[in-house]
Image 1 (cartoon, rainbow, N blue to C red):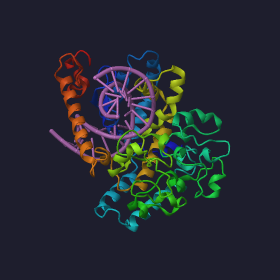
Image 2: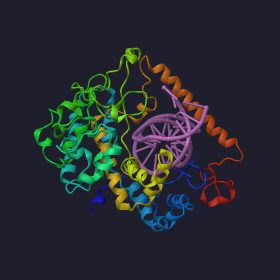
Image 3: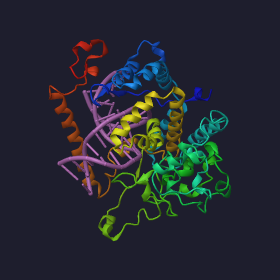
Image 4: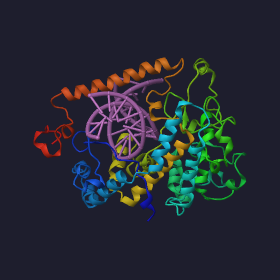
Length: 404
DNA sequence: TCTCCTTTGAAGATA
DNA sequence: TATCTTCAAAGGAGA
């Protein structure tokens, strides 16, 4: 059972009171195996969440145990290697952009070896986008500069749907880049396991030393210019300009070649932003969004995401496990390629430098606004409160009306 | 043009 | 340590 090796990335620490609070987050203890199953808050949370969701309810009820099990699994199967990698990296961060200790590299090598010979020996998801030759390199496939929507639809062409999931994927590369090994341009769907993990990543200058030898098949991508753009002009999909959303369509060679209108902006040095790796649900969303849009003729992402959230919970543990595994790999790869990156970097993305002052102010405003909003909702007697977090499940009599 | 909405999960911040 | 907050994607809606 391949998923027996899965790492589920640790326990989620907060949940939303979806059923009654309209998205207000409430604290939930993720059930732990060690708890002996006594703490069912997480499971209850799920049950509550879908109580009013009609047709889904039955299925959710049926899946209650499996979801609980999954949550247990997620929280308990901690991949120590991943954690230790991060910690090792963190410990070594004092000297940024330095060559990492051999020990760390050995560790990463160990990870790769483990992947090659261990859990990835029989890959649960052979078509994981990092691990295979993307279809765009095939004659009949197109590197669609368009968004993932298209590529998701393309899944019927023999490409695994998840091939298109990752933002660091082929979307941003020209067909058959000349620097790609020839075999990569010819082997259809041949995944190269973890040794190819870096195929769609680039390394920051300081990260070059950490890349495992096995990942060196795509050496060009390991050299990033100061703006995060590969010297060849191929931008890195995980690196985006500090402002604005990541627009995959714009990841072509002219990504940073601004039109004249933006000459003024260009004067301000922009620090490239390395995006967070996608979590399991995000990967799932990327895959299923197009399907939901087609089925429901919905366009609003908020509504679509609600549907996707329900469907996510309706998935079987095995189905979810696929995405957890993908997310785990992505985190791992991200960590290897950006060892000095921290999620915190994006809390105040682009705040450094001259252009950062405005962003800093904006970020402060945004934060303040959010806080105020929350305060408003708390002071408003009619608004939903975080009753569950405040009083707990056992004291629902103390909950306010909406939460109850 | 910018922000919000809406979802889950991961990770950092805070109490 | 527990809880809270932010950010990942997406794109329409509204300010």
